[in-house]
Image 1 (cartoon, helix red, strand yellow):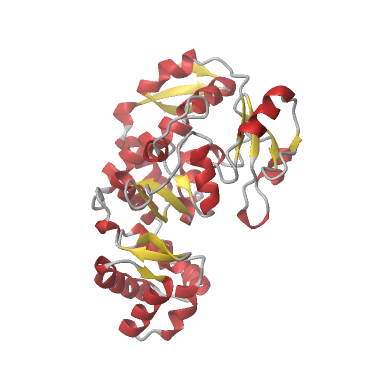
Image 2 (cartoon, one colour):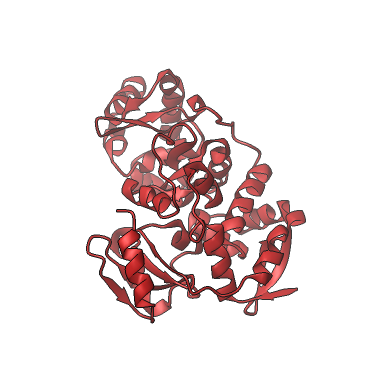
Amino acid sequence: METLTWPQILAWRMERQFLLTPEPDPAVVARRLAGVQAQVASAAATSLAVRGAYTGDAVGVSLVKTWAMRGTLHLLPVEEASAYLTLCSTVRNWEKPAWTRASGATPADVEAIAKVAADVLPSGPLTRAEFTAAVLAETGSTHLEGALSSGWGSILKPLAWWGVLCHGPSQGGRITFTSPASLPGWRPAPPVEEAARTVLRAYLGAHGPATPDMFDNWLMRRMSRKGDVRSWFAALEDELTEVSVEGVVMRALTGHVEALTAAEPSGAVRLLGPFDQYVLGAGTDATYLIPAEHRAKVSRAAGWISPVVLHGGAVAGTWDPATGESELWSRVPGLALRAEVRSFPV
């Protein structure tokens, strides 16, 4: 069994995630990163820009914006998006009483909304207000108006995971919803085992090596059934190799073990914007990336993930893109840091 260190792995991850070698195609970046979080649209644009890519008109052509991992909005490659949504849907949290209490919608309500979406969205994008009106007119369920009008979109997440609704092109600053099946390259939901192979390849190819628990934390905040997660790894078993990471057994894609073993610790300094996938893929509770005593500076109130300073692949501090000022908790070469501030795409 190959033995790896975190400095080696972080150097490899930076290269794999286009933080050392830029990539101009946003779809290639999103595919490699296993999605780009887009809960804050400007943060998604920054995540792509620091890697040399710009969205332009890619959303709706090569990328789909929809609720995916951890119930948050992501940009996903159109042709692979349904695989991610299939795995997200296995949590079936909309069937739980706590979800009904929080959203005000029963499982039957969600199914009724999905039926309306399947009927009306293939004809073209609708604004939130137009879609809400269509649902209320069709179902007569006026108690759903508040939940449907909410910008959080909690009630719509199961519809996204079922592949009947995603974000469409904005209209004068107003979001719209459309049918994902209308997007060129969209593929119907695959069987769960096939979906798992697609998503695990992408995740481990950018954020590996990892344990099943690490993957589950990234996917749905450890809400998945443990037996399901084990079966997903088993579905890709012929492509995986066990490695020892500072005493912990993890899985890596077999084709990447040689590069991981050969990787040398990096001294590179990079600046990332908020909600960057490099941080989210590992999770803010990953102490090899963020020291536990500094986690609260990165993972802040209301789910905000701060812009960070990377040194050698580890988070060495946070920073403010508006001012260029940083709060560091480990030594970072000043010349390299100042160069990063000057070149950061804002």
